[in-house]
Image (cartoon, rainbow, N blue to C red):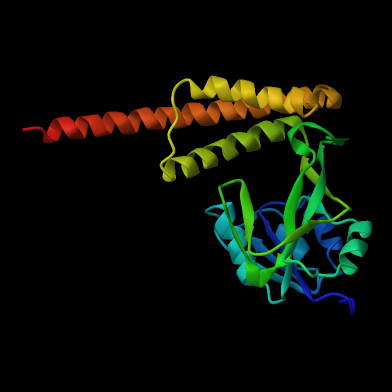
Amino acid sequence: MASPRRPKISAAIICHNEEAWIGRCLDALVWCDEIVLVDSGSTDRTVEIASRYRKTVLLQRPFDNFINQKNHALDHCSHPWVLSVDADEIITAPLVEEIQNLSFDVAGYHIGRRSFLGSQEIKHGNWCPDYQLRLFQKSAAKWGGSNPHETVLLAGRTRRLKTRMLHYSYQNRQEYIDRNRWYVHLMVDHLAGQGRTASFAAPATHWLGNFLKAYILRGGFLDGSAGLFLAYHSANGSFLKYRLLAQRTAQLRQIASHCQEATRP
């Protein structure tokens, strides 16, 4: 039930094959006035589990990209404020209490995340601090940015909450490697679609910069072997992204050159 001190809130979630986490995610959202869940064709028990929860609006939409999927969920939220949560995120009781007592006098609130790789919390590197704009006025917000790094485009002032949510990012290291390989291809498609280009020197420079930032400048080494793993594979992902983009750039230039030759008298 809504507190007299706050407006009604819709929780918005997109998901696909999240039976391992969706129950815990929804358990932590029962205080919301509505839960809008957009599923992209799960073949496990995700929809079955979600259908047990009262106040849940279940929608189906084939996945094309994260931005469109989250905007679809946002469009179907019926309350003035929206709490956007991923299926592997848990809103803790102290965070619920902080939200219930907010003044709601800004357009949105950033919520920090305590992220885990397996059972280990990652406290340094690129994963921390990790503030995301997740609670916002529906009328002032729209999802944008780049895929898969979508972000809320919000008109108005924001604040940061003190309490963080839990983010169970990856169950193991192999899942991180596999999923981020997919993310890299999404990013390359997005960058190429915007006309971005890259040179063949870019992969190496981005690998080095990414690794040094995550492992040294942001203290990833303090997370032990997990910090080294994340810094190394994050750098590898950056290398692959710019290598693929450089290849596409070279192909496009080659096609343009052939077209110019074909049109010469």
